Amino acid sequence: MNQTRTYTDEELTAFLDGEADDALATEIGDALETDVALGERLATLDIPIAALTQAYDALLNDAPPMPPLPEAVPEPANINRFGWGWGVGTFGTGLAAGLAVALFTGFGQPAPPPAPGWAAFVASYQSLYTPETLASVTLSEAERQAQLQTVSAAVGLDLTDVPDAEGLTLKRAQILSFNGKPLVQLAYQRADGTPVALCIIPAGPDDKPVSMGAAQGMELARWNTPGFGYILIGGQEQAPLQSEAQALQSWSVGDTI
Amino acid sequence: MGAVFPRLWRYSVALTGRRDWADDLAQTTCLRALDKADQFEAGTHLDRWMFRMAQRIWLNELRSRKVRTGGGLVPVEEIDLPDHSPGAETNILARDVLNRVNALPEAQRHSVFLVYVEGYSYKEAAEIMEIPIGTVMSRLAAARKRLGEEMADAAGQMS
View (cartoon, rainbow over the protein chains, first blue to last red):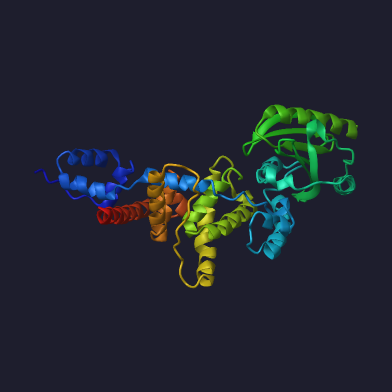
């Protein structure tokens, strides 16, 4: 008895998913107490979601490492190491140059130096780095000096004696561009593999001490010397980044005074 | 972005139905995200933003190319699961459900994944797929009905 109205599959699905509004949920709940056929219909719509979730969770373990993106690993050979067979030789490298530039140019509004957004873009960029990104990169002393001389000339600041502070290892120094200004990226790696980047951009005349913050789930330290803005970013722990930042700030002050 | 990548890849498997195509789609999506980083609004959800991008790239670009080069149909293949864990019984069920979901019509499969696996609300899933909430609901209902019937049939044949 008490035949209730016929609910649509959509309504019953919403009920099962906890997405039915209160009125409908109450109505179906009440009807289930007397309407056997309704209970059977509901049973046919019931699927083993826990097993499905388990299956897909197992699939997470199979996710490949995040591919080194454009500028991070410029050589197709390195990309192939991760099994990305897809046209990287032509498309990947071509895009690499384009995107590396695109990321740091033409974004956001023109702003007085340093652009308020540069920290956000540095953070977005750094968030693409994983311990694997730089693991295979080793700089010889000659390469290190050559790269540092190039970026020094581009940004107008002598970086050739930048220290490997607090156990950081310099993996690459390169020049990028943000809103038409040169932006130096020194890619470091900690002993535990954590990627950390020191970024430098021409800025206003004011000195600013190290201040700590966070962006994109990473710790961030920024400071200014006359003419330049600095950001050190990477990892999830404040303490090591802060001591690295202090060491690099000391060096930067000595260098520019 | 690194933190989102495994889930992005998994969503790519759900979108394309194939692991190798998921590799391509996930990588393309990362490149596109890099390209469009200026459009990401800080404070919003990176995962949803990237999922929406993956969905667009798949439907608007990669899908037709894959289907063309793949011979005209989106093939449905069994997705092997990693075989690390014990508990054969539950693994058999999990594998069975996964392959049945993978064999669903694409639109249903996408909805099932976002709501039941990722746990998004109907509204959030609708925003990612850029369709009305009612459509999410009807796709889920159709998927539940088909899976329920299939599994009842399978159980009937075994007994």
